[in-house]
Image (cartoon, rainbow, N blue to C red; front, side):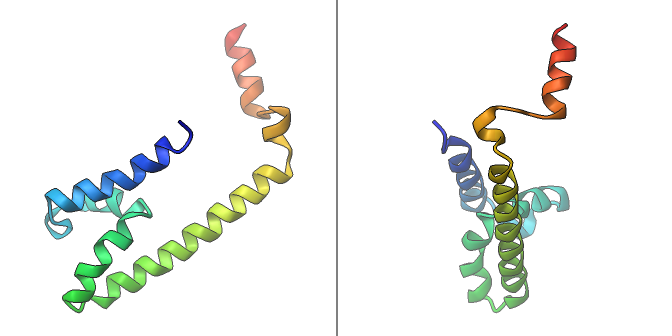
Length: 100
């Protein structure tokens, strides 16, 4: 049950690239699709086949930045002991206020 959202993020670009070409999509759809990190490895072989190396290098740079940001977020989250104590900080106080 826990990896289901991650699987969904991998399946969306797979189906999008299987049923349509990324080049014919509009700018908002293309931006949403390329914001998903799993899109870049799916699109890279076709781009390399047609000598479009710029998008592949930009995808690699995005993947590196995404990995660094996700690692930083994981370190900050787990060094605070919030997953263990269940303290949500300001969000917990907001939920309590709404429940009253």
